[in-house]
Image 1 (cartoon, rainbow, N blue to C red):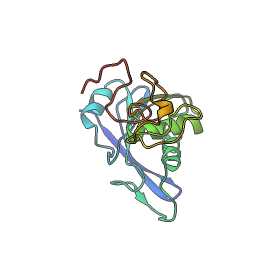
Image 2: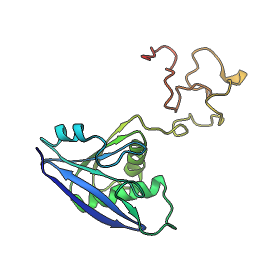
Image 3: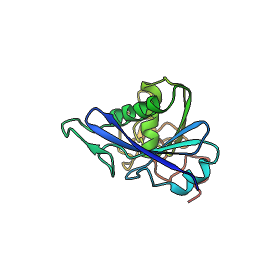
Image 4: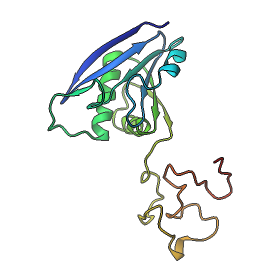
Amino acid sequence: MTTVRNATLSAPGADLYYEVRGEGPLLLISESGEGDARRSIDLVGRLATDHTVVTYDRRGLSRSTRTDPTVPITIARHADDVHRLLTELTDGPATVLGLSLGAVIGLHLAVEHPDPPLTLIAHEPVAPGCCRPPNAPTTNANSPPSSSSARAGDRTRPSGKWHGSSASTSPPGTRNPA
């Protein structure tokens, strides 16, 4: 069984709870939705055999407490929190495994905080508006396509649920495993 080291890191407006397991290259897991430091405990146990695995509770969740409720909770703030954790725990490169909301946090982290060097594994980021083609009109993914963008096989049509959403509808020409 892997030894668990837990600690708290102070950040503007919050005290961030985190856990560290294992030895080796640093791997931080940023969980989805309501996931806290113990959400993927089985996965962490397997990864900790050859990695230093860091899990944490996002601000305001579980054991990470808000110390100043006037500090807003945003994706940018979550990315800053992850950057603080990485800076606290390593001088060198790190890998971040982001799951769903954690993947969106990781994408923001990679853009806004390129140091230390980061490898991001973004698993199922929930970011419906981030991947629209340039100049594409903003539409609701559930609305019918406009006549000008509804050509068969048009992979850039803004109405395609597969385009920039986490819905299970696949792009034209691919199979939907569901």
